[in-house]
Length: 594
Image 1 (spheres, rainbow, N blue to C red):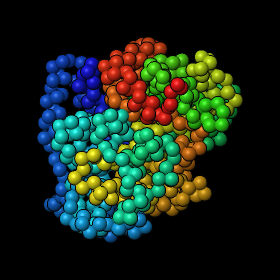
Image 2: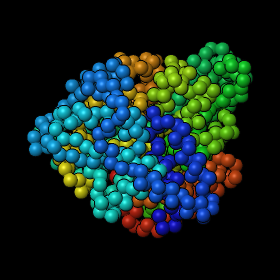
Image 3: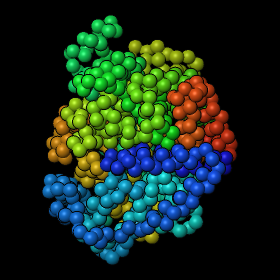
């Protein structure tokens, strides 16, 4: 923060906070914000103008009480639903939710939620509006909603704490913020509420360890379940499964098409074969893959998800998930805080990403989320890998031509990961598969300074109850992605395909989508660690810039990651290496040897 410009912080905050809030946002809004920032990157005077723009926007962020629209929204079963079926399914979820025993003393009280600004039918913020009337009927209390533009969210929240304003009682939080919360004692643990008979019971056991860890610190719970992010691979199932294309692939390459796409090497082969061919039959060449690779367009999240199996390997012995100096490590040496970002495994992964980026339109080097997703949803791209929003958007016939044609799987692996202990690439018989939780995994935390903390926690727990949380997952406009056992299909989980088809999903798409998330969160043997320390924003900003330099051919993969490491070391030293090391060790569950 001391050596990185305010503009870079604004850019990365936009990148990180938008990650899982795109299920129903208007993509043009995302693109518009990013374009404005990019035009203001290089000149000092423009940076000053950017600050002025931020101040103007800040004046527009106000508490949003229950709105009084000119024309009241239609209500179905007491919900501001889009149609009768949505209202009916929401009512069923509400009826099934455990509601504890609301305290009569809460009647007439109020608290405030700070949330990403996507509006009343937008991702992440939408459910806070959707359930508010029902909450008021149940408790006699209500809450105000403060919508915060994603480009300003981190700074507004932290300024609120640092100045003592304490406007927010609950923050629908991006998981990257935890290091700052804990270091500054901004939020309070929730364990004391779990046996409180007033409070709704939510199922913590339904969460995979990777997601549960994001809501805890040093064994204490600070968050409740809401959204669950990961990147998965999508492809056109109708094309990949077509015997005609499989025969043409073998005729051209001499090999069977690796339709399982277990490794990134397989994905690259398929993308290379299809790129430039008219495989959709519209008379024009089509794309092998589509990605969002623009600086500020979340391209570095692509790299995070795909690089994990090249870098992170299981621990020897009975527990493959154990974190030690060389195993289940991705970002830093856990004994010294020295960045590992330029390791041979990271470099190999970036070289693979660069190769993939050449198997689609060169324009995608400057694409953000909306443009990259549109290329797939319009039927022009064979593959993409991104968040769960793509699977949900594919069901929206106003923008999708691919409903019923979408295959999905957990992120592929590699048979040649790098072993940092042996300092060599391995040659495996089976791919090294590493789950990811790339994105924000938005979920609420409770301010230490909440004015009505019990009431505020009641809302947090109610939204985390299985029936309500699962309803949000099955309705794509909420931006809430699957991540619990009650989202997985029977017999692995507790959901049925009808849960999804009732919400407008194609049954085949839904099964493929849910199975992909099940693999990532529950079935992959190990998991990529999540970065949750102070300075995360600044480090990811520098990383994003250098990755783009490599993808666009300005420098090599090795040079890009060497530059990233140098920037990270400067940022770490500015913050205090020993302080960050302690927080990093805590965040990944590492105990140094004595």
